[in-house]
Amino acid sequence: MAVTSSSSNDRLELVAAALTSLIPGSKVITKDDPLYKTLKDPKPLTYQVMSQNVIVETRPEPDPTIVVPLERTMNIELQPLAANKTSEEETSSEGTSSNVIITVQFLNGQSHKFSVDPRATVYALKWSIFKSKGFDEYSQYDVNNIVLTFGRKELNDDDRLLTGCGIKNGSVVQVAVKLRGGAGPTILVLDEDLLDPNYDYDFTNERDTGRVYQRGQSQGFLGFLKHEYHYKRPYGWNRIALKVKGKYPPDDTWLGIPVAGSERTKTSKGEWPVSYHATGREGAEGIAAEGYDSKQWREKCYHGKGHYSTPDIEVAAKYYTKPFDQNGKKYEAVMQNRVNLSPGNTIIIPKEKTRAGAEYYVTYSSEDLRPYGICIREVKEDSSD
Image 1 (tube, rainbow, N blue to C red):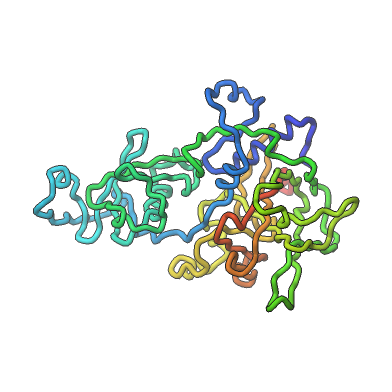
Image 2 (image 1 turned 30 degrees about the vertical axis):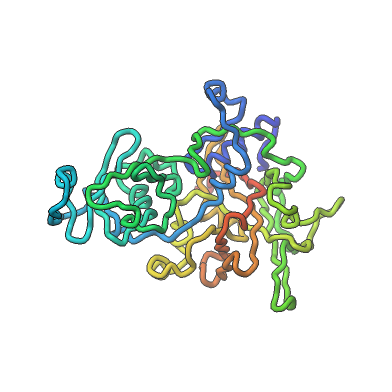
């Protein structure tokens, strides 16, 4: 069944609901939403804010024993006090001979203690906060929404050791939950200017006939042995186009050149291949659970951190999407991107290694993974029972 478009308002509201499901920690509304009139300073959802919050770096899950909520630790031995410690430090000294105890304090006044290994990074603390029991109120967010502050400075380098930030036994770290790209509000207003209806394409009732479509071309060796990348069209989905022309200098070559009056099957020179992703699972869990060998993934970080996507929309839907409700129906949404597969920009992981039925692309920079469409489809209830 096609995604209905009885009016432009219905279409916009559906897109807003889809973007809410794709941007962790947000609520995207239209100007027709009653909530809009209550906003003192409405914040528009710009392409920049959207791309920063849907193109998110994925990392392997940290060792869960590196940062542990204190209520989970047992038989904590007191750490000997240094002779020069202040009385304030003395009252907070509960660490082991190797670990230290820090306090994590939320804006609502709640505070929790964590046992921290000297090897712990900023990201390891964020992850432990996100996964800890007792933080259910933040479950609608992604780990990347967590912002840590210590000594009035935001801890922006996820790879930095906590000890390198000056954090020690008894330290207090402040925690806030924000959208990426600024202190931004969780309520964002969608305007039609973000969309480009001229490039919408409804694949809902179309099926794969075996016709081959190509988008993007490999560089090959010394300019030879080039091959075109297969474009797996999003059959069964309604693709809503984003207005992306002119967003990335110097030009729009990466989008390809449309062919007037016909479907384009061949790639254009300089065009980037197509990939898909969504943000319904935390970190790499959606991929790693059934894809990579978990031991290799966690212990060796074999393919490293990066922005993950796949050329197969069904794989993206399986591992990443989280259904959302709109007007009594259930839908799911996936971002359609163009990805720079040039060597040095993206690693291509073959499907033999992913064991998910499709390749994965691990792209280092968000500049090389560019969203240009939102694919939406209605989720049908299984009536076979």
